[in-house]
Each structure stands twice: as C-alpha cells, then as structure tokens.
Image (cartoon, rainbow, N blue to C red; front, top):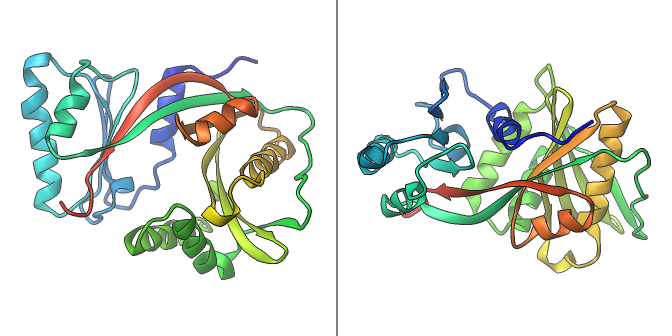
Length: 260
C-alpha cells in the first residue's frame, strides 16, 4: 500500500469540510471553493484551489475577498501544489488575508501495533454529547483562541453526533484534570488527524505523541490503513515527522482576521 498523493491530500481538506444546508460548492479542475451565505466562519468559506493566469490574479482575489467582506464572513484561502501562479500568495496577502504559516501535508501507514500511551496518570475518553462544552472550551484554551473560535467548536462538536458519524473526538486528562483534546475524521480508507490541542502548561510531556498513538490505534481497530495530517511546519509537523509521518507536500493557509 502506498501513501496518498499531494492531490489526494488536498482532496481530504475538501471532504473534511462540514457543510451547512446552504453551502455552495464549486468543484472544477481550475477552481475549488465552498461558500456558505448563512455562516461567517472561515471553515464554511474557503478557497481550496485556484489556477489563474498571471494577469487575472489581482482582480480575481480582490473580488472573492470583497464578496466575503460584504457579508461579514471570514475567508480562508488554501494555496497548495495544485494552485497557481507562484505569486498567488502575495496577492492573497495584499488583499488583506493573514498568512498562518507553512503547512505540511503528511501521511503514514498505520502500524500493526501502536505503542501504549506511556504516561502515568493519562487517560483518554471519547467525547459524548455531555462533553461538548468541555471539549470546546478546552480546545480553545489549548490553541489560545477566543470566544468566536470556541463558539465554532461548539457548533462543530454538536453536529458530530449526527448519523452517519464521520468524526470522533477525545478528551485527555492527567490525574483527572482535562489537559488536551484530539479529533479524527473518518474518510473512505483514510483517517484524517484533524486536530490535537494540549494546554500550554502541559506541553513537552509527550501528550501530543500519546494522542497520536491513540488515534492510530483507533484507525487500526476500524481497518483503516492510512493516516494523514496537515501540520504546522514549525510545530506539530516536526513532532509528526519524528513519529513516522512522511511529508508529501507543502502548502500555505491564509485567513481573514477579526479586525476585518
């Protein structure tokens, strides 16, 4: 079994979007975008592929950004291997979107045996409906994000119990204190490690590694043999490399910030 290609990793991002009833999808070879008129959240309003001629970059980017600003929606723009030209990122940033840093598209084959958690006092339990508030608050604190982010997580976590269930989430506690959360999206033949957040005071203790191993075990128990992740090149991506993930491609995310 081989690792997924860069194109397949980009497709994971599209398949992982939680769409609303009014979400509009444009899915062409030269342009992939999801727009949701009812939602101001960037996870519902995202450009995932743009192949533009150099002389149309500025006008196209300006028009997309302006449309979202007109309805007070935050826009996320992903520039991966299938997007062009090379100066697209410069135009997106000039239009007012903030670069979130380089991101690594990574993959690994699920091992036959995953190591144990290996941390005394660490327990992991799957999020149930009664845990949604705890999960959202914990994740927002761990990623040092504000109330808007926590509200978005409440919405996403609440929807995750609708059938058919495509995601699973967990809360990790150390000696009974919630310290981290993890999230897994189940796609055909692939497990997407969609998020893992550890409270700042508890970082450096191997909790991120333990939660990665835990999710690999979850995939193995479901017969899924491929794990993928989009990881920060200067943070979680380094940890994933050490834990067996291979870099398939690099990309950049840009996002409209609160002041806009």
